[in-house]
Length: 186
Image (cartoon, rainbow, N blue to C red; front, side, top):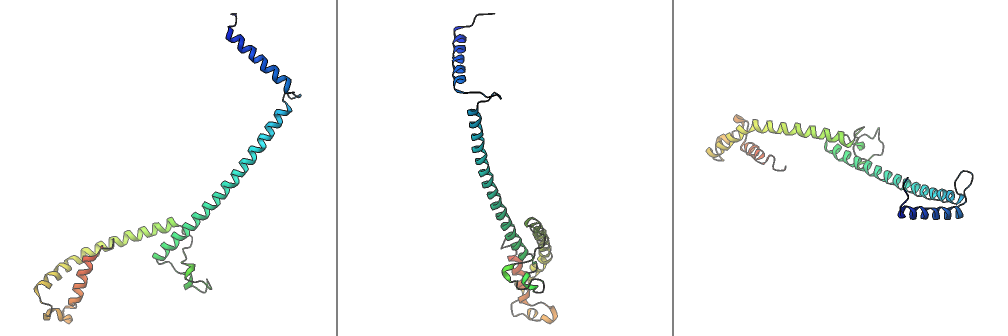
């Protein structure tokens, strides 16, 4: 065994002094714990537990606030989309919803914002497809109307003979204008 170095000896002596000080001031009971230390830990635990309970209460309040906000947002989205999609109004069914008014909104049933948004997306996609099909079908007529409009004057008998053609100048011009404006509001 080697002899301790000066540093080790000094560390050992310091440790012995601290240990003696602790033994002098901290009385240990049969469990090996000092009642003063136990009281300190219990007080510290009580303080920490109280702080944690306060934090839990604050977090529960925040969860309730967020839950209410999400619920309100979901309802507003459902009402907006439900109205746009033509869902039935509560006010229109006084037999089942007596006293309901326009402020009660539309009946969306078990839907949530996501399911109504899916329905809106499907309808929008279908409407765009139908619009494109109609546009494709009407384009030849618009081109023909444009040619005829250039060939015949406005008071030409052919424009005014709607019995024979079934179409008036106004009809052709409105159709051509509708095709030209189609999609302008997107």
